[in-house]
Image (tube, rainbow, N blue to C red):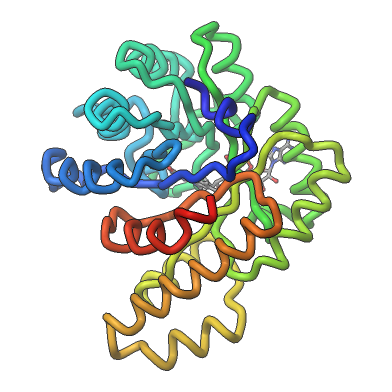
Length: 292
Ligand code: FAD
């Protein structure tokens, strides 16, 4: 089933993002984690493809995103969305991956350009995610296609307006739903959504929520994607920095409050960055399950 179908019901769509194991770890080790996360019965689970582009398609030695997506779809019986980056991929490799996903019954892709990585030479078959989206549709393989969006603007964009114009082109190239970068202040998301609708983008937009669990995690995230931290959150992190359990619980409470408010404001979907942590995913789900 294409994920765009989920948005046709009145319910808030609830999705969880997971990542495949690092190269040194066997894939079996994440299967228990995936089963636990899948038992929460999210509408779909999305699977990253090596943030930073280090396991872009076409590398030798298997495709962990494909394997994990297949496991979610075929063993856990939950709809899977495979992330697919294109910045360092040739058309033939992308087509190969799409065919393999299709063979595994995976019907949805999150089409991404990927971060520019100086250690990974660019292949200029695709310049922007929009080029990948067009390519996927032209392949005739009938995938559901989502794209990324940035409530605070993409880090490389000169202005929010430039980023919005590019986002409109991306949607016009055939992107059926959007998933947002993480944000910690709902008012940023509401104002982004207003601009998105004003520019004529009508597809559903899921809100990316990441529970804060450690100071280093949040510092890494902020340096990569530029999400801003409201004073309420920085105070919380400072207060519980040396108490991991307290920070985890405070992070879950903060994310719960964000999600509850977003649902009250009729957000299309929640995309939970649960960092392969079933405890966190379960706690959040227990808190907001009835609201969905
Ligand atoms: P694009 O949409 O191509 O945009 C990239 C930049 O180009 C933006 O600044 C945009 O404004 C500009 N632009 C786009 N089109 C045009 C145009 N026509 N003319 C001029 N400028 C243009 N990365 C990974 O490596 N693996 C993952 O699994 C992964 N998952 C993600 C999931 C989500 C929900 C999100 C939000 C991001 C994810 N990323 C992932 C990060 C993403 O790859 C980076 O943010 C990347 O730098 C941009 O990807 P994009 O698909 O948004 O690119």
